[in-house]
Length: 173
Image (tube, rainbow, N blue to C red; front, side):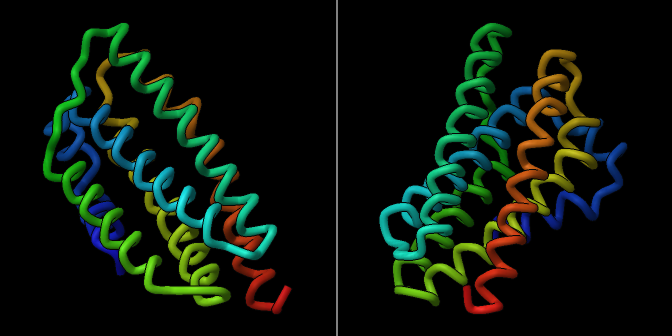
């Protein structure tokens, strides 16, 4: 299990009300930007390394969509004059993303594709769970909460797409 998965799983073990009271909007902004950047970095690597057309297309979609979400989050933070506040969760997400990239860089071919897609399935599920149980309930600013709710369906679509890829690859397609 990657460190980012451990961090998000740890977030989910906390009762939402307890953590929501302890997290602030600046910390949420940092978590959102970091989580998206982790997926942008992994997608960029997969887009450049994969020889599987479906994996390559998915990776490019991850880069495009998560870049757009990050831009929306940064624009909102600027508008609200909120500076994303680094915190243990965002730091751990960054470290986990770096560890995932390092592991992926040691792989080639089908092993690379499989590892990338498996991570995407797990990562998107954990991000959705964190959105539902921690980030959305913890957001106090209505515009931030609205942005989080608005982007949630894209994460669900990414999860379903990644699961479809995972299933196709398991069947040898």
